[in-house]
Length: 324
Figure 1 (cartoon, rainbow, N blue to C red):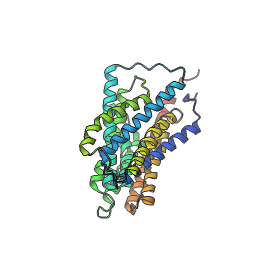
Figure 2: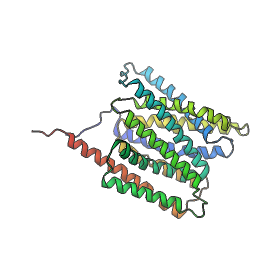
Figure 3: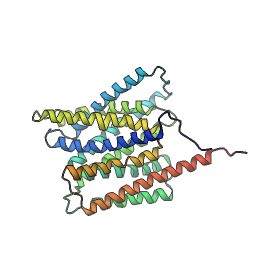
Figure 4: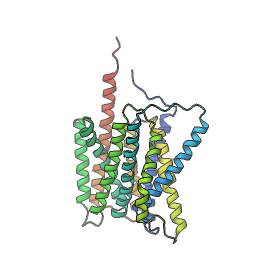
């Protein structure tokens, strides 16, 4: 007997939702790169407006969905202390994840910043899960992590004199990946047994992240320059609406019908789309070493997701009762 995920959403539509979300996430860095050219905003201010704007839109969508739904499922019980710890820690990790990513885009460009962030994230998650929760990687997982590290090394060390890959930008990207890994591990560890609503958790994390970022963004410079203000506001609105509120909403909706490992593989569209936009529209150069390192890194991450999927299937089969 095969275990299936019960969802009112067809699998095909779920795949479409996750694919759109990953593609939209890849455009956030491109919009940020354009904002850096004329708005005067820095990474912290940009991250604040993305988080705050996304929070407002997510709250509006959530209120609309609740109004349309006559019967709302009761919220699952979760101890108050664990819930507060999970929300605060996740919100801080989200703020670090987003702000460091935009700093990486500013420092080393959209293509390299996105590839390093999204490539190193799953590796740090796998290592962190092994260290903090005892989750076994297995031989395939160890090889995938080693391959990802090799790809990252080629990407960082293979630049032609630093013209394409800048160490500071790579450092910010690795910090962003660490924030993403911390956010995921906190959700796994503190969310066990709580059955928390991932959509509600996202809204709460966005609220905490916006509060954390506000004073830092105010010091950096919260408001865009008056010159070309309309263009800056349009780009900020796009970042808050499409790659934030819409993308996260569709991603969580798609997860109801698509396996998490499958979604993680589809999410590799984000660095691919970001690299394509950077080269085709932003004038960034992609050297041979950068291309090879990117390919090795993304292949290893895909292999890591496939290994996770196989492990989940094997565990489900082992747990299934044997028919007599």
